[in-house]
Length: 114
Length: 114
Image (cartoon, rainbow over all chains, first blue to last red; front, side, top):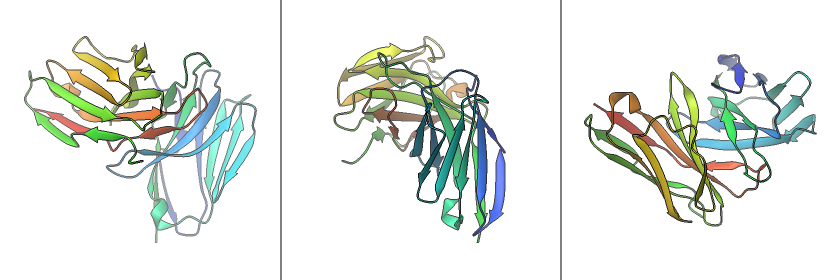
């Protein structure tokens, strides 16, 4: 079963608007990561937030993490048509001795209309 | 570095045939992951290796699936015999490790079993 669940499943916005995607998970995590997947391509890492962090920024991306609610959000500001892709959250439940063990959610399909 | 390299990109085979998917991780990465992506089940972790040793193969669906990593620069995922329900995109990913690092994905192998 999927550890993370993204919400919404699909999001359509106009260029220049902000896009917010949410992720909820069930078990304790070491960190949470967000990935992007363009159609027919592999996943590309966007940002990692550790369990002791609450917010992180990278360019137009802002990620928040609330471990008490077991949820995270990804905000893309000033969206562009090129941001059109599927976005996945991945929870890392690995251990220091065994390495990362990423479990992916079902993804949010973002469409940015020009 | 060319990134994670998977071959073939596309594979069409008949039910009952043996299929071998190949992966070359990024040089120096100690962890290698095999994922399967379908519309119905999303991204599923099949197996992962640390320093060529399988750590967790609990995601391997059946005995028909096997994975090997004979050296640090090569891994295979074999399905024998293949079935139509094995049709999916299979991704290989590698990471530097230990836990808490991003995973780098290959472009995937789209497998169709007819």
